[in-house]
Image 1 (cartoon, rainbow, N blue to C red):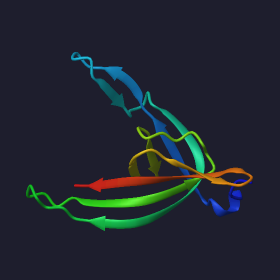
Image 2 (cartoon, rainbow, N blue to C red; image 1 turned 90 degrees about the vertical axis):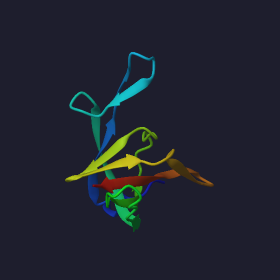
Image 3 (tube, helix red, strand yellow; image 1 turned 135 degrees about the vertical axis):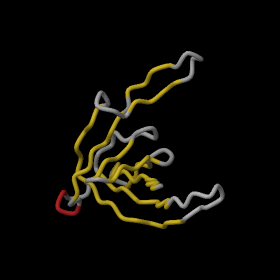
Length: 113
């Protein structure tokens, strides 16, 4: 049984990039207007933040947790939530139960600066 929708109060967009190849044969990922955006219900919460300053910049890097019933989230996707855009950090993990799949969890990374 998946998570009840009432416990997933936020609507986010899963952004699937358009994959192309550059002149050297390397894949490129386009998250612009041509990328597919799928609205899904989710729970988001911040995990931790840091401010690395090795090169003189002061970006704020924050890791967040995404929980959703949507089982089509990939490691190259991005998540848009209001004015925030997150990168999916690593492969999302389907969470199993003895009765079968329950939900999906993904670590998200938000970088400012």
